Length: 78
Image (tube, rainbow, N blue to C red):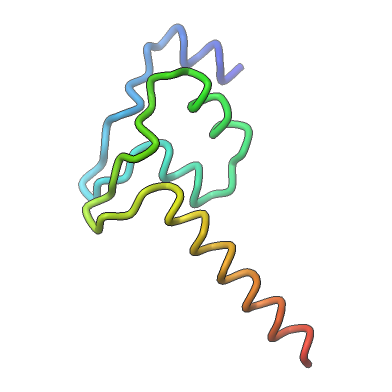
């Protein structure tokens, strides 16, 4: 369904909001691997696009992974 909408709507994957977030950033932040896969396979997404703070989608994914590891570590010690 998402693939069809991306193709037919000619979704602009490089559009950024007022904070510089593009669809790839939102997918990384929300852990939406299915939509991320569709966006990346479309070939119309710059994976290095940066937010106004200079973060790429990979920065967000790594930051969340680190946060989860710390959270799990603290929880396991209780």
